[in-house]
Every structure is written in C-alpha cells, then in structure tokens.
Length: 320
Image 1 (cartoon, rainbow, N blue to C red):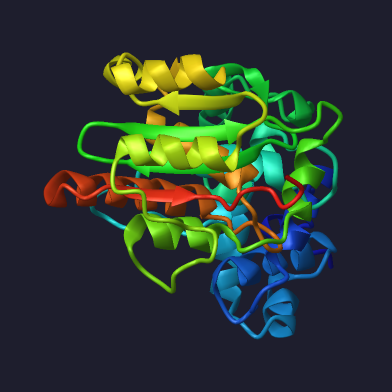
Image 2 (cartoon, rainbow, N blue to C red; image 1 turned 180 degrees about the horizontal axis):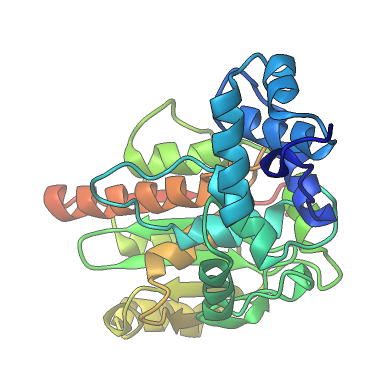
C-alpha cells in the first residue's frame, strides 16, 4: 500500500534546496535547522514517521512544519515574531549583507533568497535595494546615496565625527579598478570594533584613534593626515556645509562636501559606508549594519547630552 495522500513526497525547487541545506547545517535538536532538515528528509520520499525517527523528533512536529512549508515556503520555517512591538528592519543590514556576502549557491543575491536569509519578504528587500540604488549583480558600481560621484570599490574610511550640531563622514577614494567585495574582505587592520568602541566610549583604546576636541580640530587632523588627494565629506545638514570653517577648509584643500539626503538618513549612510570601507577582519557579522547604526546613534546622544564630541579618525597612510 502506498503512503497516505498527505504523506506523499513534497517537491522543492533547486533554489529552496540550497537555502534549506544551508539552514539545516546548525544544531538539529530544534529551531530552524531541524525544520529545514524535516523538509529535506521528507522530500526524499520518507514517511512522516520515518522522518521523525531519523531526526529524533515527533510525527506531529514533522506534520506541522511540512504543512507550514507547503503553505508559506521557506519563510514559513522561520521563527515567528512574538506578540509585541515588531523589530524595525535595519536597512543597513540588508545593504551590507547584499554587498559583502554571497548566497549559499554562489553568484548574486536574489531578493527572494536574501529575504529568506534575513526573515524578510522579497518585496521588502527589493524596495530597500531600489531606495539605495543597489544592483546586486553589479556590486562594484554601488554609489552611496548622497555621494553619487564616489565609487566605494576600494574606498577608505578616513573619519567620523559627531558633536552637538554637526555630523560628518570622511572618505578617501580608492583605485578605480578595485572590486568591492574583494576590497572589503581583504582588509585586516584594527577592525570595525575600533570604530564602534571609539564612538560609544567602550572597549580598549585603538592605536588609530585620536581625540580632537572640536570640529575645527577634527578637520585639521584630517588635513594633516591626508595632505594629498581629494576627500569626500558627507554631512548631516546644510548648516554644517555652510559653516565658515568648513567652507574655508574645503577651499584650502580642494575636498568635496555634500549634504546627505533626507532618506536614507545620514546615520544609515554612515553605517553602510563604514561597513564597506573601514578595516575589518574576517566575514562581516550578519547584524553589522545594525551595530554601526546603534553606535552612531549612541555617539550622537552622548554628544548631545554631554556636549563632548565623539569621533573616530584613521591613522595616516604609511606610504606618505
């Protein structure tokens, strides 16, 4: 006798299979790894009972997650958001994940695959990509909104500064031939932890940080450390761009100052720029964007309530 209709083998697409194999690689005693393993095992034609036996779970559990997969696909296997306030999607995480990682099967991310990876709908991912002007198949062509003339491929983070009135991001352009993903993964200096620690006032002091007490001193330190070449400065508001000290600094050194758009915010833009251009060690953390957004917000709050600036300034190049 054949299997009951509800226990016949289910069909999974090649794209789903790649994602399921990736999800099933963790601890299969529970959670998403077990659920993915249930779908993969049952898809081979085994009964619910045999699937449960092989995975040391129960038949009702197998039935529940196979039904959920049949109704919702891979997103149905993700943990549900518990009642209460839904966590806000950090767009910086989506952008950085798109540009610094590759899907399990290689190639470029699709909105569907990245949505499954991050627990988002493919529509949400696609909207974020459009908002940032991001084409996953062309990572080296990505431009930061607000800095349309600066290719981030090979660019370098020079400094970040937050005080009571002003917020600035300073970048130096890299070689035109650089490839974004390889340029990011190849960096191995002090790490983004130095940026976060300097902005939040936590962790050990970094050898590449300094302590300029004001915006004027920050600009002077940048000019002293980078006397050659044009720097790109993204400021949070028109007021900062129009300050006499900033305009004089730009005229003296030939740097370019541009004002961040209203959306994405300066904080989101600075987090993505830092995640793509600051020194890192190893594979970027999945929540790197959110971590940097939180650090920048914390820095601004600190500056606002204490009146003391928060900053990070990279060490000058050694080949001066």
